[in-house]
Length: 147
Image (cartoon, rainbow, N blue to C red; front, side, top):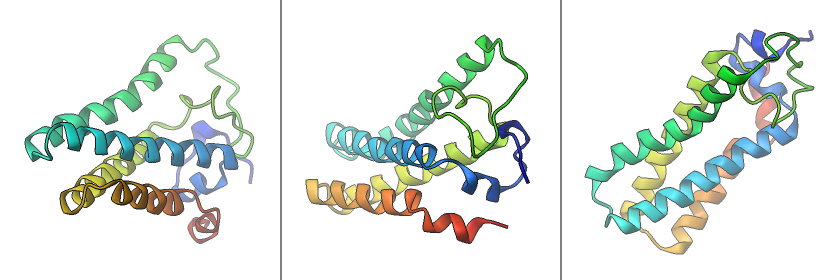
């Protein structure tokens, strides 16, 4: 069934994104883990700094969506899920998708901070990034989520 991105109504719809969308989302998580590592090192891993950092990171990821939605002159004619363009359509999803994406980013930020609390070496950073990339990008997972 063909569905436009603004009509997404179940988690399984996210499995139908083109590979470029999955890759972009995964690379965003990998970059966020690197940024978490940098903040962890600068703050000495003091948890006091974690919450403002995590909230700020999520806000920085949602802000472009808010701005693009406000400026979007093309209020109709949404792309299909399979045919969406990563750069042109990133702000046209159903709103709940951004909640899921924000929760995902928060999860990986918490996970990374926890890993760096145990070991903040470059190897730990690379391991956390590789692990997150495998879990967020592997196309095989799409089959399990489809309904």
